[in-house]
Image (cartoon, rainbow, N blue to C red; front, side, top):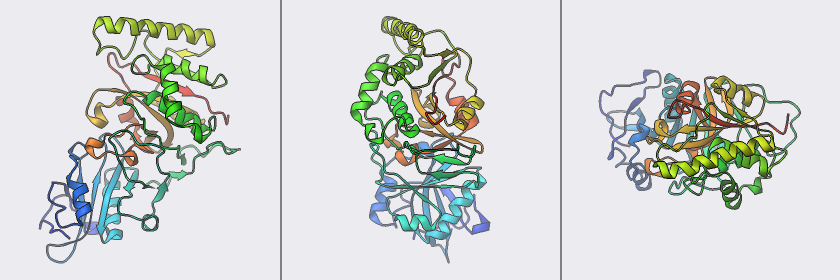
Length: 378
């Protein structure tokens, strides 16, 4: 194992561990495939750290590389080497000290049996991965709160009683968007599969592009157009659009000529919403209402900016489908492979309420856009 500096700040004496920022080269003494994975991606945007368990002298008996998207409530373990049980204990203590609620573990070098021995549950493999984000074939999750557990997806099975509010987080299938602009369509389809309104096999690229084509405002999907497309695709689907502005949205990056005809299409979408009976709620949707909707087993498609989590100001749709103490659990159909981000980060991702509230206040003016899908189980 690599040598550990004699006196590192951030020490966790309760488990005799050390936490330090990761720098390229620290993995040089590890197996070549692990060292290459740690060093060939610039993970600096996700605050990479080494959590290590010192041994005798200057050697580590075990270590893990951990990262996380900014503004979230989890840590992801890329790899753990050496004395893995001791390392996992140290990682869990480190996460709890930061008030985090979840650990993830990418399945590059860990077996299902090893993960289970450390209290991790398997994640279902992704149905697709977003372009350039080639993550592992497997991944694992462990909730640090006793008030949160992951259960298998509903996917149409009969449910006579709703899950205890804030207790069960049912995992939807993970599907990474196959284009840079179809996040709205993907979140809507995943929500319907998770709710049992569509079969799992309906979630494919044909469905993704078909729904995007009907919902798009060229190239993105704005809230009213997405709600209208959902109702047209599923006439029995209970859809409500939440948009607390009456001006066209998501057009400020365009020149006036390009923005004008897209604004016209948005006005047509509002007319169509009135014609087919899709409510457009003009009030600001608070995070408490998002939590309440999830507690009723509804799904919330939420428009947010990627500035906090990924470092660039791009509007993006995510699916809000679970709650745990202090955080809303989302599924993000896009992962940024350039930062080491994978589907393991994007799936079952807990975001603190305050962070999600800030991320989803969209410029200009701090408007919020969302689409609520009423559960077929209600």
